[in-house]
Structure formats: C-alpha cells, structure tokens
Amino acid sequence: MTKKLYIETVGCQMNMLDSELVVAALRRRGYELVHEPAAADAILYNTCSVREHAEEKIYSALGRLRRLKKANPDKVIGVLGCMAQNHQKTVFERAPYVDLVVGPGQLHQVPDLIERIAAGAGKQLEVSLDRKAAARSEVAESFESFAAK
Image (cartoon, rainbow, N blue to C red; front, side, top):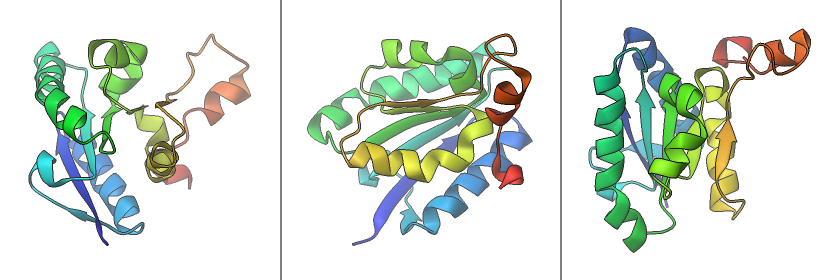
C-alpha cells in the first residue's frame, strides 16, 4: 500500500527547493503526493521565519489539523524549515499534536524520523545547535543537509 504525503511550502525559493528534496527522499521510501491533508499519511509544512505572517499562517493551518489528528492518530504532522529551527519546542507547545519538528539543516533526516514516529518512538525534534551550545565541530555537524549527503 502506497503511503501518501501532503506538503505545503510557505516562504522563500530556498524553501521550495528544500520541499522538493524532502518529497524526492520520501518518494524513494514509497510515498506519493496528495493535494489534501485529509488524504495523507504524513502532513508536512515547510516554513519561513522571515515574516511573522508566514508563521501565523502555519499555526493557523496546524490548528485546522487538530480534529484530523484526533480522528487519525497515526497521521504524522510535521513542521520543517526556519520556523521549526527558530521555534523548536514552541511548535509542540502551541500544537501538541505535531509529531515532528525539523530545522533546515536536518531535512535529509525526515524519512527516517517519520519512520521512527510510525514505529512508536514518539515526537521527534531535530534542529541545528546554537553556535554557543557546543564545540565548533559538533555545531558544524548539526548543520548537515542534503548537500552534505
């Protein structure tokens, strides 16, 4: 049975490229794109933090998913990109039914993270470390991307 993916991209052209890379990685795992969140097994929002309006648009979209997630608890809901990096745990606080928060430097991990959630591992958070949070080499490693793979 084919798994279904809904992805919405809000933000800059870089976000569009990042979404295409995530879609390609998930297609290799057997996902096909759908045009409605209700039809999807995984619902992803790839976001920008440059403008507050983009962030509020995503929080509003997440709010509309509350009932859908309650009716279908196996659906994976994720927030990707700059907003995920900047808001991190706040996304889980404002929308506790979100399963996945992934910064732009960790997008290559999305397929594995979705599989972990489906296997019962619970919420997943993967973001880059703050420059002051660790040694330079650790911080650099936390900024991996598709380009590095």
